[in-house]
Length: 307
Image (spheres, rainbow, N blue to C red):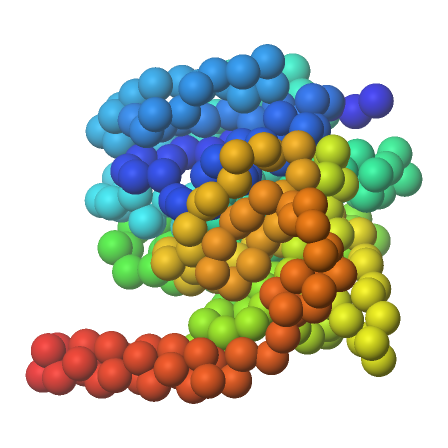
């Protein structure tokens, strides 16, 4: 079995979804999760914690390059994600694969999707919420390769602006892998990127098309649930990522079986299960309108302050 480590340089307050993330990470004991952090992350058998301040990580990052880099705030770390294998080589040298991701998500059974055939590729997924790369020198330095029409890593690493160097759709690293080395890539979408509140208050899967869904996590499996033509349907997910859900509450008392709903992470119901699931999957058009207008007002206020 090929070894995997997912890297999290994280500085500041942990997101409300962290307890859910941690519960699902612990259910994937054959994958390691490595933190560089000043946050209160408790180590576990597969959760490795390097306690440090942001200034300490800045020094580690700078030592990897022979030119002055700009890493002036934790948010700028997103630009460096595809360079982690190069920057942190001494920490991850014993793994076959390394990756990066987000904490505002919940994993399913990672190994059921990341099979040996899938891990024959060099570059997997490519999204900021979860990306994996083969741990070899050529792959770990591919972010440096200059290709006409794609961002130059030195430009991204020497500006304080966010260039989206690591993401799709901005001529960044993921675009370069997909377009220039398609045979080395596994670019399936077996995950669910849940819609933003301004698009719909109920969950929609932006990646797989299901609407008015919730998510069930049981044992180490994650399922997207919906009622379709009156019948409950379930689809297994690699992971679910929840965009801009800072208002979500964590009300779980038993993380062996729980649900993720638009307002809260809750225990799986024990009574009137079908009725309660149907209710949680309902169309929330009024709340959708409320959050659409709220986001619009916040956006306009932000523009007026800039002026």
